[in-house]
Length: 132
Image 1 (cartoon, rainbow, N blue to C red):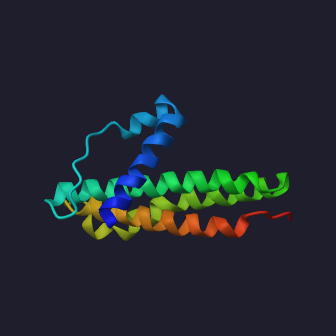
Image 2 (image 1 turned 90 degrees about the vertical axis):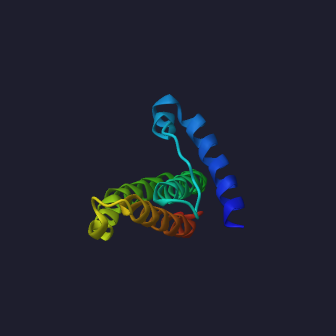
């Protein structure tokens, strides 16, 4: 079941990458060989794909929510989103510090990014339709 969700989510990532233009799509050019039961590199690649899928879903949800907001609330959400983004990567770097330099670091770091991004996506729903 998880593999099926990963394939569907990867399709969403590819669509977002195409829509975002060549500058954004360039970050998705690196080859990946995802196998959740494979060697460490393959598991690392799966974690990267899972994060990319979560990030694509977040960006879609953000756009959907922004369309429902008053101009004043759009500014507030944009500011909150920027603050969240500014803190997400450093928080995951701290959380994965014990693995830094090791082969597991990408798995731990990208899994943290995925979890944080999925949590933020769920939090965006509380903004839908806000007037003030």
